[in-house]
Length: 89
Image 1 (cartoon, rainbow, N blue to C red):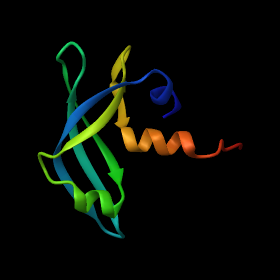
Image 2 (spheres, rainbow, N blue to C red):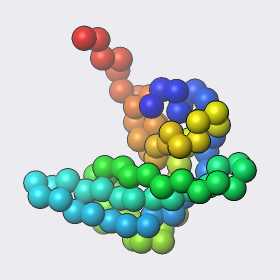
Image 3 (cartoon, rainbow, N blue to C red):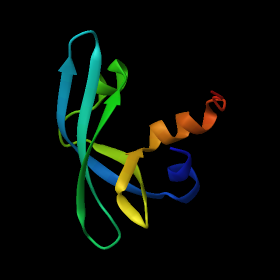
Image 4 (cartoon, rainbow, N blue to C red):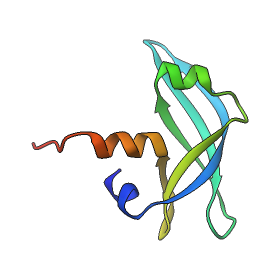
């Protein structure tokens, strides 16, 4: 996520599907286009609040790497990762 925060390009994607799993896990599938018009599909686990707020067809802010546009994340996840303290193992 840090690379997305440092080098990512922001675009608007569209929610294409919503999935609810056992034990309170929520996922959305989204599509977005890079600056050359190529379409990409990705998935992201989201909070219940985000899941309930979004509908299929809703716009979502996406960040992708310009040199590897298939690598992406939701802007909110990228921002959250930047705020999180570094984890040392």
